[in-house]
Length: 509
Image (cartoon, rainbow, N blue to C red; front, side, top):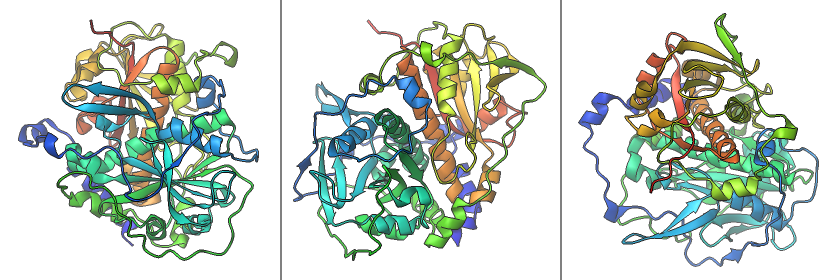
């Protein structure tokens, strides 16, 4: 089974690293005339409009980020489903650019604003929506039925009967249409697949918490039946994750037949290009049987690192009584990505709230110990009140920042982020790094998916936590090995998965 041929994941990661040499040799240019359309459009399928009168929870965003989704059973309505889809991946605003046309901005951050993650749902009968498998159309805020009937058992069986997925009345499926992002980022897109799925899932979990809907993520599943349910060609599009929403309503045990759909889809662009590295690693990280999914789910996670006897600084997060009151709905609707920062200091409480939100437990099948993560957070602090400028590592269990080196590293931060000014201008820059060989040893190539997705999810939480406090954030790319070297020797042998800059946005006049 290729999942345990972990040289494939290591090779992909090595070959898609950015370096000064790789950028100098790069002759890629963007063919704007061939840019893929930002939405998947099924032709000839009736649109089923979703309710636009969404529930209003008025839950503070930081509370939604710092609490686990409830496990209390309650009926899930169509309005609830519409709320979850809108605040997870809906179009939150539209803007017309001369010479370009309308651009739709979505609820979650995405590399290059290319929005290559699609959402589907498999649902039981609910008032206003018959049982079936549906595609979510963010542009029209509608569903389109691909299959009629309750197909949740296909997903439960494919997951090796993940207990948390078993009685969910709605199962969300997140897929990636690779070319939509590879048009710009080529083979590195497979990293972006999970970064952008992760930011979407950060929104989903926060929205589920605000709505008091149980939510659980499943990364371990037999890939073939899940992709067959949607009739996907995995060289073009493939399912990355399952999300169980709600609880208390088990699927029928009978599995319905799944003939090919052969549905017409609008072409993404005039021509598309394949990047074999994506297909090779996706195939190599696929699980063949439900039993494989069960074995994968019971892998032994990594032990958390203990703080070294260095200089430690405790976090100072707000209490529940003093949390900023911006609601999750407000934050998601107004979230963006900062293009420039001021050098205004970030309060220690604000940074503490952001880090605390990032490392909350993730209700997923691979995280068996609450609060334990595959990624560690490293920081370059430029301007945080009460915290000396320097390089840090965050010890989540102890809620402490360990100073690795003191000093002004603005220039180095900008250089690490491919020379992008935001990393030098920001108040702080946070990097997700992981011990990739150990993760692959425990989880196989599937662990690569998990490590990248978790980093994206942590980044998505930091996005929301920043905007909840009136500051801003932006995800950036990076020179891989230079980041590791910067945080060495503490981060020696670790791989960087994600980078996010935090601070106050500079308003251009």
